[in-house]
Length: 288
Image 1 (cartoon, rainbow, N blue to C red):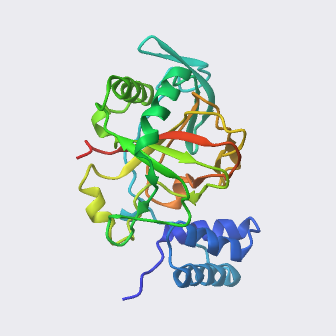
Image 2 (cartoon, rainbow, N blue to C red; image 1 turned 90 degrees about the vertical axis):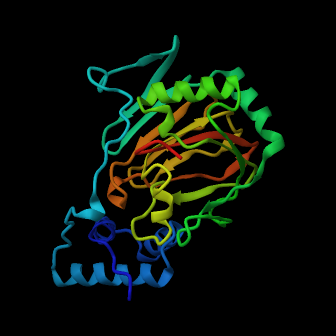
């Protein structure tokens, strides 16, 4: 049986066509996040046909658009205008606060010493980074991700306990609902092409992934060093580029597992130097 495009994906394609985006680039974007090329081409053709015939693309929020509770770092009265928050006597700056999609850029989330200690603890463990295998729910090598990395459970050391507890408090999300902290290293030319962090409902492997804590609902990326050039975190749908500055972090939440979340993001190639980040993905329920 052929896989049908969700109304949300059709709506996203229709929106991009309305903006004047180049069809070939849209197909490449869909392929990059894991869709088969033939499927991407068929979705584009369907959306183009509807647009040419004047038929509206209606996004019907059904099961595929199920919204979930997500972390909210700046709960009222700090939801607007906050310049900093205090987490365990550690002052964290609020540099950017975007509501739709939900994105917060923190300054001074981690100290210089914490960043450098985490890098040194990671060096001996680095291996080529993998991505989720959308068919099986396992992992696989992917040309879109050219970094190397490792991971630590939250209680691996006093340093990891401190960092993970601070992330939990800063994002106001239970520590037990987070995946192990993933450390990634990017050399010159390494990148992570634009993608989504949620598990797509249309993928065969998603059911297996959801058994370990439900859907992903948010991501926090902390920068452990400042690359000499390149390595920004970009959000193409909203034109946002976050500079990778040591100790800073970008948080973003996605209350639905569709492109309507507007959380397409990627890491641009490192042009000079190297880039180290720590990523924590947050789940609906305790991660098992």
